Amino acid sequence: MIPLIRHATSIAALGALAAVAPYPLADPVHTSTFRPPAPPTCEDLATFAWGGFTLDDVATVEATESDPTHCRVRGTIDTEIGFELLLPLPADWNGRFIMGGGGGYVGSVQNQALGYLGSNRVLTRGFATVGTDTGHRGIGTDASWALNRPDREVNFGHRAVHVTAEAAKTIIRIYYGRDIDYSYFMGCSRGGGQGMMSSQRYPDDFDGIVAGAPAYHWTGVGALFLQTQQALYPDPHDLSTPVIDAEAAMALETAILEACDGNDGVRDGFMTNPLACDIDLASIPGLTDDQRRAAEVIYGGARVGGQLVYPGYPYGGEATGEWPMWITGGVGARRSGTPNLHYAFGTQMHKYIIFDNPEFDYSTYDFSDYDAWEADTRRTAKLLNATDTDLSAFKTAGGRLILWTGWSDAALPAKGTISYYEGVASGDEEVDDYLRMFMLPGVQHCGGGPGPGDVDWITAIRKWVEEGEAPERLVATKSSQGEVVMQRPVCAWPAEAVYKGSGDPMREENFECELPPGR
Image 1 (cartoon, one colour):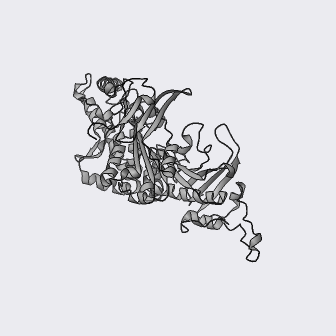
Image 2 (cartoon, rainbow, N blue to C red):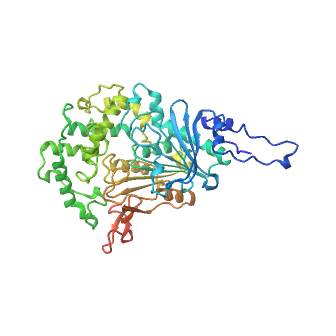
Image 3 (cartoon, rainbow, N blue to C red):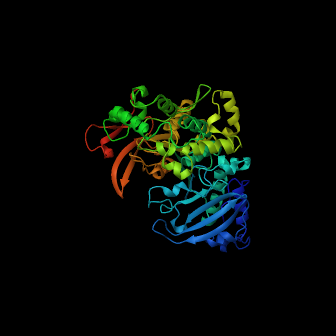
């Protein structure tokens, strides 16, 4: 008989209880001859009556070069939260479930767990996996769906991931006829923030979470995005050329790398720890006063009424990295229809989520009064921010959390991830029992860049959760046309990879993890 479902009062559990109905009960007289019914086929799932969600499309998907044969289940929770659950054949299931996050403002069913490590995908590894659109439709830079819709903001902020996980677990239990062994979450950017939110609001949902480049402090990041745009595009009617143009960005990057690239013993176009770079912006030639002031905002972070509300960006990647797309202007401007992605995300957040005012003008918002800013953003912070550094409930539940960020991330400052980790660590001396953080040199937002960014996070979190093997030193890989061109170790914070002084710097065995001076 199907096992009893946990949390029987949840939406997903109600669905499970309804779904059990087609199974015959044991004959009380002839129990010795009773045999449990076979689990349902993929197509059988569409015939069940579910409570709290509907299945809109159920089909067996034949094997491809990327994935084995599997059961695809598409459904809707309530009226708007869409999801897609992929189920390996029963003989191929490894007993585990992994949910993948989404990017930006989401708006379509996304599953970031599917994109890790190329052909070694989660379905090939035997995971059942799910993704959600978080309850609305639209492109990733558009927040107009939130205009005067607090219900959608709640779903986007935290609820959709939770109820999708519950619905997926219910279907999995019915399809395989048994409970899940372990449950995981993996995401980057917005997906990383979703993972952090789960650890804080729903600590029992996942045994292990990998949160990359997490968008976890929406109001702080929103202030940073607006302030960079006020400095770079002070005239809202002229978005053609940023104050820091391509020539100024190149001057910044050239001077920074000249001063600091060799600090780690290897000149390779990026820094192992940009925080160790000591350079005076005033010493960089060829910059105007306005360009220096704009650079100080980008590096210095968002300040409201004199208080730092979100840290700025480490040095690196100003001209050859993601600055043109995210901060100053370039490819991302053409793709999003705005000067850059800071402008896109920052203005959309304030127009449709914080103020419910499509006429909001970023150039006139005043950041001089902290109390006024806090009042303006209080409701949004409660819904979207995953800033609670008390993870005691997650710790008690036995959860494990890996944070990671690329040092050259121009979307979300690496120092923001560090700030969260340090906040947790300051309140719990046992932080290493359940939280580890890794900083990836030369890696941009969720990957890419001159540094190696491919890490087998799935194996790392599984070993920690299932075998008690806490990650200390992981291997990051950079490939080109299928060939490995560089590998480096990435070390659990605050340790960093240090070149031994000899051997090929493209090979990870020629580095060792060491604590920086003073740690």
